[in-house]
Image (cartoon, rainbow, N blue to C red; front, top):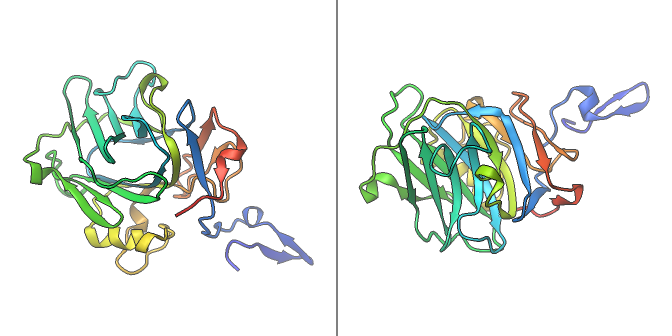
Length: 264
């Protein structure tokens, strides 16, 4: 059976040793203490142009402005408005900033009922797709399979479209500030702009799916550029990139017990 190993000379060979793809179980997530916990995935590089970002998060009374997703060139020198950040926005929404080192831009989603102690699935899409020249719009947020914010609906435009490659950090603001309080699970980046139907299929009524497998309206497995399960099949402190691109993350200022049996 896929992910369980092969029989060889009367014994069982572990899946990893047999070269098999780990089976998707989604039994684990990472818990962040809001003090200094973060995951360094800075070997993974991305720009804020024509992409989609998917993640599951469970807030545990986070402070205003705590970071979920960050993209930085220089973690010590970059500032909030200089690069890329998605943060918690009190009350119960998200806010974000983009910058290219000179210009910057940001907005708040407002209250989207991003409630404490409850799992929610977020997807952010930026641009119109890799075959369409980047113009800075549209930008859409989806929560739990439904659109909750579209920059066009509030008259926004003019996102800063930087071609500078950024290193990914989870729960890490610039200079180590504003880390996340709560759990994060199943972070994925795509090099395309996902559709509403694809995102609804990914949400799957609150039951995360294996994004390496096309199913139903979800057909974007070939567009995965990075995919981290945040606990499942991971051995502390390494968070393995399940996209096959080899950009593993490192749990930093964390302990093995931060891999928890707490999932959507």
